[in-house]
Image (cartoon, rainbow, N blue to C red; front, side, top):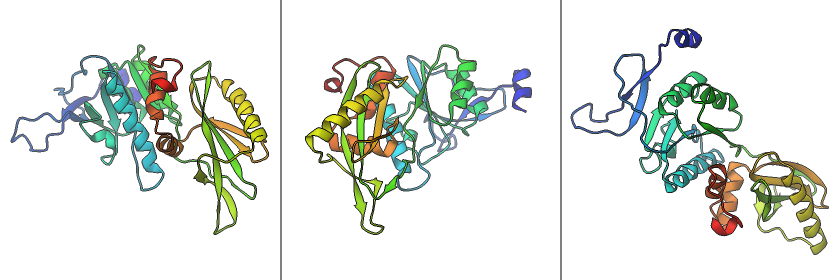
Length: 282
């Protein structure tokens, strides 16, 4: 059906959601799609960025994902971008007028996202990891849009071990790795095991182990293909386990303990506003 509509150029138009049902002249800039003739949504003026995100569906770690989306929006507005959000969740912080200049209340499908991108032609489009097909759909209809994948996954991997594990966190700007600190896991007294969902910052390391972990981590992160926020998982003895993007809950945790807006720094990396030495600019 989507291919048939595309073949016949039957594109969506958009109508504003008006809370007063027309009693007052108000423009909340919250729109939904329909297949009519009159369109009430013009392309947003000025530099603009599209954020595709569904926000939290339940309490717990899912809310950290919405925090990351909100911080992305706030930083983009700081750099004078008009923020256009595509969301299907009325609970998301992206619904607020302080974070989004316009919100498309639409499902998270390729056709719906592509329709918004075709109209808005954003300079940047931020799409969640695991939904790269949405990014490809955007690129097909708006070739000037740079798609940025939000690698911060909503659900962190919980590693349960009888041996304490360590997490080295780092920022990679494409050339230099900046250390964000090492986190240690705490023992869950109920099961008597260490879990990566229970954290302590900073981890207390012997000098030799700290040197080994730092050197190995910087080397592993520097081999990543793209700039970003990364985490290296270790056994306490310093055995390198895995390199992965920092999860949304970890970004929220490290932002709090460091007193540094890591999402803002990441956005600057993505839009070319990051200045070395980096952390001093954040």
